[in-house]
Image (tube, rainbow, N blue to C red; front, side, top):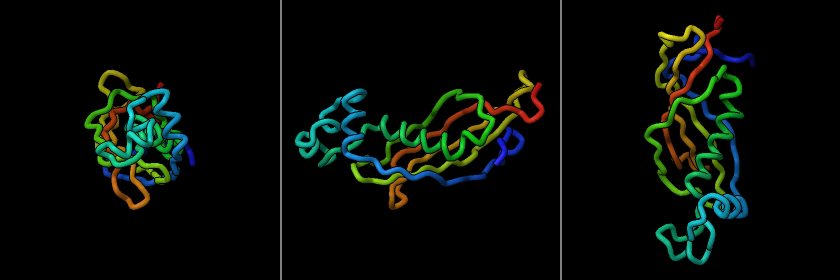
Length: 150
């Protein structure tokens, strides 16, 4: 597939892709480095928490979803980087042994008035579990190269 430019993206188009099963050891490793709260790093404490067991950090879930998005979608788009994220929501926790996949929908696009080489695209990104239940969602504003950019 050739790289898709701003002009190739259509508002309303959506894609589902990727699949990754998260392990207990990954959850523990990530949390020990970046989010060492008891329900992420201690199985006994996690069992006594509101989660009733070990869960991945929400930030770990974001990172896993991002990898799926990059591999399954963004590497095929003339992406120039992100402008920001809004409405990040953790709908349910990611547990060991869960397989996640990602969804993307193009919400809007607008050519830049100041830079002929790019346009602005807003996406809805979601991570879902093996049953299709949402784990997290967010909207992201990005820069995408125009096809005939100088």
